[in-house]
Image (cartoon, rainbow, N blue to C red; front, side, top):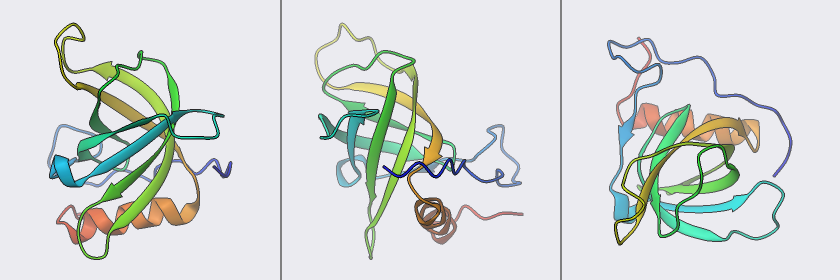
Length: 133
C-alpha cells in the first residue's frame, strides 16, 4: 500500500449525529479483505455492513483485537464495482466473541492507499445518496 498519508476528507454536513454518515451495504455483496499492516498477503476475508468516509463495520470469522492496525480492500457493490484500499485501526467489537459464527467489528480509516481511493469512495457515497449539504 502506498504511503500517501491521505486522510479521509472533511465530513458531510448533514443532519445526523455521526461525524460521517454511514451507507448501509448489502453484506453478502460487499467483500472485505484484510491483513495486518506490513504483511504481504491478505489473511482474512469477510463482508462489510456499512461504510463512511471515516470507517466501516464488517464481519470476519476471526476476531481482531481493538487497536490492531490493518490494511484492507473493500469491493463495493454496483455497476461498476468500486474497490477502495484503506489502512486503519480496529476500534470495537460488535458481537460477543464467544458466540459461534462471524464476529462484527468496527474499523476507523486512518489513511487511504492513494488519493484515487479516497475519491472513489467519496464518489460512490454521493452516487448512493449521501450528499454534502
